[in-house]
Structure formats: structure tokens, C-alpha cells
Image 1 (cartoon, rainbow, N blue to C red):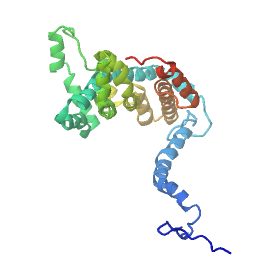
Image 2: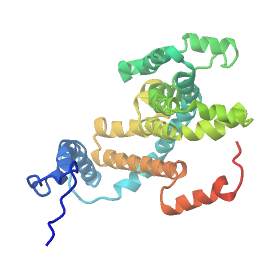
Image 3: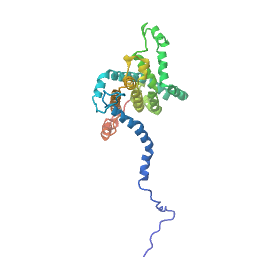
Image 4: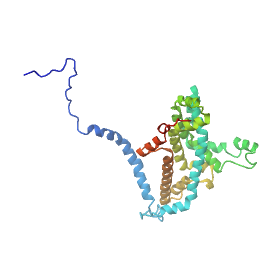
Amino acid sequence: MSAPARPPTGAAQPSAPGPPRPPGRHRLLPYLLLLPAAAWLLVFFVVPLLQLAAASLYDPAGSLATGYAMTWAFGNYPDALAAYWPQFGRSFGYAGAALVLALLAGYPLAYAIARKAGRWRNLLLVCVVAPMFTSFLVRTLAWKTILSDNGWLVGLLRDVHLLAPDGRLLATPVAVVLGLTYNFLPFLVLPLYASLERLDPRLLEAAGDLYAGPLRTFRRVTLPLSMPGLVAGTLLFFIPASGDYINAELLGTPNEYMIGNVIDSAFLVRLDYPQGAALSFLLMAAILAVVFGYLRRTVPGEGPASARSAAQRSPAVAGERPAL
């Protein structure tokens, strides 16, 4: 009877099994690490949100003196929308106009810092962020001085006949839009810079080798590759700008008030908590609808159907030569 075969010398020996791990312990560790953040969101976001939802359904006839009764008054929502729909439209109109101005100024600025600034890049980034070291209120008050009727800007515009001799900027929609653009511009520039800074310069060189001009290179290479930063920046700009009320309060008049001013007045002046809460939820719902619609049009799908459609549109699959 032959002896059992022995493993060759130098071969790796099977290691002895270690002590058994406690069942499920390693699986629970990620959730345990999330507990502090989840508790913070629960206490300071979910609970106040539920209280706000309850307040929006109180009896509108109540008051702080007599108290509010929960009557499930869903009619608070259509009543608030019917009373203040102009302020809703004004909020989104001002935020949209400010976003367009911010894109016209912010995209070239982010591109110049990311691609052309060289050793001045860090200094220019500090200049973009530096205004945020100052209070939002102080920055807006500074614009009130800049846009005043006796300020240098209004005088210059009158001298070049862009403003009538008695024309003004302060207390107009222009002032509110300019304030929104200035105050929220860093939220747009920084994500754009992050995307443009990672752009491979060899792709731009390849576009030039394929006889693409600057405009075509921007449209087919630079803009698509910077879309993640563009989408993030526009959302970070548009969402707080839509709910802002400081700029309209300091740079405008009641004719320029946005929905944020109405909500502020409902809670702190008129003490109409049901209407203020209903307007807050309507604003959140409107912003969510705009954001989801924007993301559906700008962010491509990632499912199998979209992958197949992208492959069918690909020039390589169709046997075509890719062209810029």
C-alpha cells in the first residue's frame, strides 16, 4: 500500500482557520457610523418638518392668543397660492434671471481660473471665496450703497445715456437680480472650477488636430465634460436664490417682494402660522418640481435601455468616423 503523496517542499501550507467572527458585527458597522448624522437629521430636520406640516393644517381662524386647533385645513394651500401666486412667479423669475447673469460671468471666470491662471490660480480662488467671509447682510447693504442714486455706478450710466437723467437702479427689479447674482455667484463658480480643472488638455488638443474651431471645441468637448459641475453649480445657485428674501427686502420695494418675504412676514409680523407653513411647503414643492425636471433633462439615464440607446447612437457602432 503506497504512502500518501506529500506536498512539495516550499509549497504554501494552508493556514489554520482563525477565531470565528461575531455574526453580523461587520455588517452593522457602517450603519453604526451613520447613527450620529441620522440622529442629527432626525432631530433638526425631520421633526421640525413634521411640525411645520402640522402647522400648515391648523385652523386659519386661530391665533397665538387663543391657540390653534388641528382641523386638517387642506384649504390653506389653495388659499395661500391664490393670494400670493405673483410672489411665487417673481421669485422664480428673479432667480432665473440671476442664474443667467451668473452663468455669463461665472463660466468664463471658472474656465480662466482652471485653465489659464497658472500660478495665480490660488489667489483668484481666494478672491472668489473672500466675500463669503463677510456677513450676507453686510454684503447686501454694500450693494445698497453701490446702487444708490448718488453712487458712482448710477452716475456713470447716466453719463453714457444708459439711464435717464432721473433714472435709478436701487429699489428696482434690476437691483434685486444684481444682488442675487453677486451673493450666490461663488456657489456656481466653485463646482464649475472643479469640473474644468480636471479636464484633460489632450482632448482639446485632439479637437484642434481634427480641425475643430474654438466654438465647436467648446460645444462638443468642454461643455459636455463640465456638465457635472454645471448641474451642481446651477442647483446650488438657484435653490437658495428662489427662497431668498434679504435682497428683495434691502434692495427692492414691496413691489419686488419675493415669496420669502411673504413667508417672513407671515411668521414674524402677521403671526399667521398656518399660512406661513403652507407657503413654505408650496415653495419646497415648487423647487423640487423644478429640480427634478431640470435633472431629467440634463443628467442622462443609467439604465440598460439608455445604455442600449447610447450604443446605437455611437458612431463606432454605426461604422461612422467620429467627427467634431
